[in-house]
Length: 280
Ligand code: DAH
Image (tube, rainbow, N blue to C red):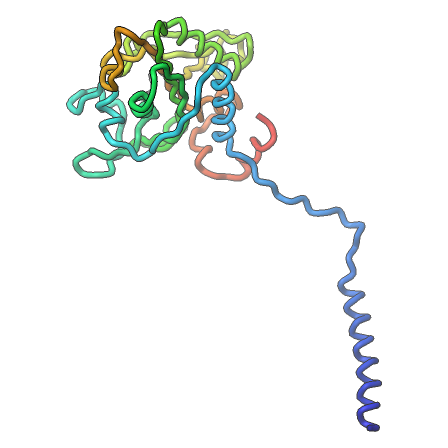
């Protein structure tokens, strides 16, 4: 009994001292400023895709997505590019299988036929997504980048509709003063085909470092959908016509924010990405 009493007494002293010590050590200084939680943010390319979807939604376009692993049937044949056609060389293709029937899509254009086969006319759709090219990398070339495809097919669609749509896009993205330039170009899936540019918002078209003195910034390719492309999906080119366009999404971000190296977008350097987290 004597031992038990002594033990209990001593135990109480030791436990109290221990508690004292822990309270002193663990004290929370409630005057310390808190640590800001690190919040994630959408990638600048994702933000641009969202913005483009919204702009085109207001113009009556749906947004659709398609497969990145594509058949050469949709990537080429259905776009009026038969297998022996030299235009295939324009798209340096990454092949998945040996016969060359499966490829990583080289552009978002294959979705044109996929969408038209399923529905319409009328069709009004934009398709953002990744595309792949067998390409040496430099500041303006990447083996993976993003495009936005646009397609409108209906009765009586004309080149004026195409130009109006592209001009509205340029103004929504770069300011209400912007003008666009449309010049002849060749793509097998459109006739006539064009490339289009926006006048440089930095210098107002006078010529500066950003537009390399030309006053214009290239945005992409476009044209009136080729009758062969319409026929291939069972549309009657005597009844309906359409326009299509394709543009590089990273390029738009570069043009607007002055980024001068395409490779920065896929490099995943947080110091780069964080700069887009709140602004743009
Ligand atoms: N697919 C083309 C490319 O990647 C871009 C393009 C040009 C798309 C003209 C179109 C178009 O829809 O009409 O080089």
